[in-house]
Image 1 (cartoon, one colour):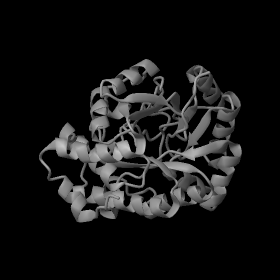
Image 2 (tube, rainbow, N blue to C red):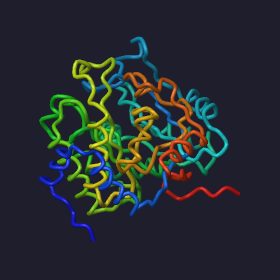
Image 3 (cartoon, rainbow, N blue to C red):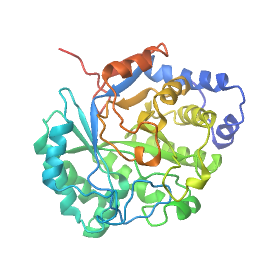
Length: 350
């Protein structure tokens, strides 16, 4: 059995110059957990609004009001129409994240979920909302997190996405996202969801003002909660994109740093079954490379349904992929793409 590594050992991995060594270490763990499988699903995203009360410095998506250019807030009728437009035969998941709208109360978010549930077949899993959105819903309504999560479950939510984690270090958060849920609150919300039987994902935003040490601390906090609950399905390293936001002056880290971070995430998070490489953020080429550095999931077909990274300068301005595209990415790495549902059950074609 492989011995679990600690903080200092994890930091030392960043100093390895030969990327083949890191790749080999990450692939050993990846293949033990998932063989040569590359998971994907047929999904689309729904982003109800980008008008947000928070002012995260890394965000290119946020608008201050509906009157600002580039802003949107969907009515319930528009949510219904959007679901009907984006749903394709075989779709198994809708991923719902957006913003914390200053004029919308918790009933709006409940009704969004109710509308989605009525618009789509029962076989489509609703994964919604981020811990930050849930935190604000609960605070604004004067409710406990457990109550809000139970209400969301009752209306059709089956899983939570991993957004809003950013970097857990409080000094970094004070600079990049000072007015939203802190690390302890984020972890509390996911722990509560796990206790209610919900599986969730986790993320880390890297490549901005954080240090490598901050990243390792973040991973270790996630590993500790996973030891406790076992409720995380996947970890998604999210690359900071530098276009159209107040932190654009930083630029972006190079692909070597990205691949190291993926490999080290796979090595440190030995209790996470999956590492997801989100291709609308990384681009298809770099996403493919991450499969050689520990990633075993490349998200899904998306169907041109998310603007969060395209507004931040991603090369994938209209993110869409077919199953054939995803299978090709895997095959070129001598791996096999396997379609899954939201809980990593293989979809068997009849």
